[in-house]
Amino acid sequence: MKVTDVSTIRLRYRMDTPMADAIHYMPERPLLIVQVHTDAGLTGLGEAASYGGDLESMEALVLGVLKPIVVGEDPFAVERLWQRMASRPHQRGTRGMLMMAISGVDTALWDLIGQATKTPLYRLLGGFRDTLTAYASAGFYARGKDKSVLAEEVGGYVERGFRTVKIKVGRNPDLIWNPLHQMWSSDYATVPFEDDIERVHAARDALGPHARLAIDANNAWSPAEALRFMDAIGPDRIAWLEEPVATEDRRGSAEVARALATPVSGYETETGLAGFRDLILSRAADIVQPDVIWTGGITPCRKIAALAEAFHLPVIPHVFSSAMSTIANMHFIASLPNGGLLEFDQNPNPLRSELFEEPIVVDEQGTVTMPTEPGLGVRLSQETIDRYRV
Image (cartoon, rainbow, N blue to C red):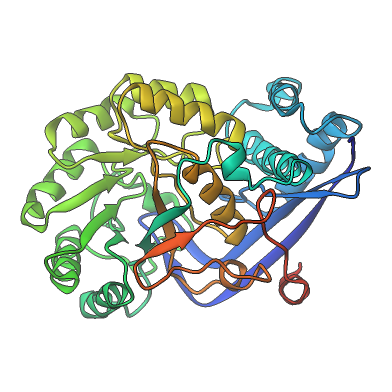
């Protein structure tokens, strides 16, 4: 079997009400699907993360730089192809966009291997479990969304069966060094630092005594601000604190992790095996969070998970884009002895809920069952593709 072509599909869903995390303003949900075609009539699917830029720039990298590397090659040689995709364009940078682009192609190659061997991908990767526990990823900022609206939202997830909920924190313009000041729409739906503390209290109360609450600061704080915030919400029993400081501030993250009994998780904004090696070795994270569509695909994510296991650390991948991101990370998580928890975005997004002919469903116990079809085990909905295609 040989790769004959690589193509892309650009999709975009424009939100009725924009949302925001600590520093990012999100009026739309973009998606770049990568398709790797073969002479056997099989097509593998993947997603190249388009965070931080337009779809066209990522598409140009996939088609202009990576496609010539894999066309004519055997998709089973995925390790060799990954090294070539990472090495030949290395002068353009070995992190960031290049890793995002490789992610889409690498995932599609693994999908092809699963299809060709008639094996669900997670079983091909080791098949540690057949079901995953989903947690509700929600609690974003939006105009007019006060703490009472947040509490109502969070309480609804518990009623639907979720036992862990994560909300956003850190959109605090009163903090001088917050990266928010340099970002698009930096005045949208902001919350003073002290009021953000009250948001967490409200969410904790709404969850009740048995559900867990995690918070995600998306790199907004300094170490001192992170510790001050956590001290103020100590009674709220936070399950984990995600990305409290800048990704490159490993020393600062390690300082926060040492000071807290609450686990520090991260860093989704790190990319590649070497970056996660340094995070783990510096003890900057207690929970390791690579993303299959962001950090280079399944090939390096498997190695990151093995490294985390060697240090007795759990892996809870970042999963926030589309159904393609969800299914790719699901197969990765289900193969891990140190995995099992799936981030499940709860914001309105038909590119997550309607992208496949058979949607990914969280049952009333808050669990997701792995697909039984070969490879990723999904089929794109042509109706959804046609409706949101750019």
